[in-house]
Amino acid sequence: MAGESGVSDEKPVFVDYEKWLSDTFEVSFRVERTRYERESLRIKVAAEQSDFWRTYQVEKQDRAELYYAATTYPLFSDASTEQLLVKPWSSFIEKTYRVNIKDNPHWPLEPDGGWLLPKDWYSRVHDIVRTSIVVKYLDGVGHIAEYLRSLAGTLAIPDFECTFEARDTGYYAAHSRIGVDFNVLVENWTEVETHGQFEIQITTQLQEVIRRLTHTEYESRRMREAEPAVKWQWDYASEAFKPNYLGHMLHYLEGMIMEVRDRGPASV
Image (cartoon, rainbow, N blue to C red; front, side, top):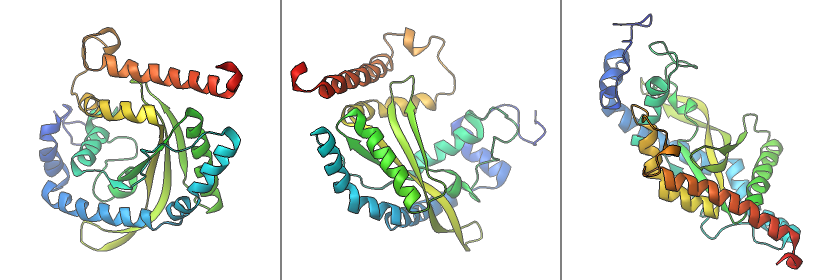
């Protein structure tokens, strides 16, 4: 049965998403995958060449020295390589599926913001290009987030965003999104100037370890078609129980480390 939009009331599962896009909007996975693999690299180059990213690369050592002068501790983790990366096609198309179908509260009508389709998905998906800044200590997250906000103001970037994530899955990080202009070839293969964002995640060394350990489980969980009958918090034998609570425990531990560190040598 179809709803007012002409879309079936029953949500397609992900394995049927390709057919749904083709039948409903005449979107070809094959064509769009080829286009994505080319256009995402163009966005990456635009982000790398942006004034924001170039300035950060020049000034990051100054930030580390200011932090050290204030705390006598290093700011960055040795694991902080800060290489801009492109979201794989598989992850990207899964995200459009979640927006259009799985997490769409208005189904079978369009989601908030309209259907996420090739004509505008390069401007609406904000983490096609992303990187991580890994700091040693918990207060380093706020230190870098505030610096990035200040840098965006200095460079007059109007659509800078920064949110501090704290999820029940034990994930803690700050997500900054930075506006960037780039050109893409759209459906009729004409080049169009587009404005979008790239993402910088700021996290601690301990949280980065947990993220790497739990990323696969997290990806599979958010693509699960049906929620389990028992929440993971009560299923101690589930794959999510130990790593999720470990994330919370480490966050608490990092807070305790900060408290001891800030008391100074007399406290140890």
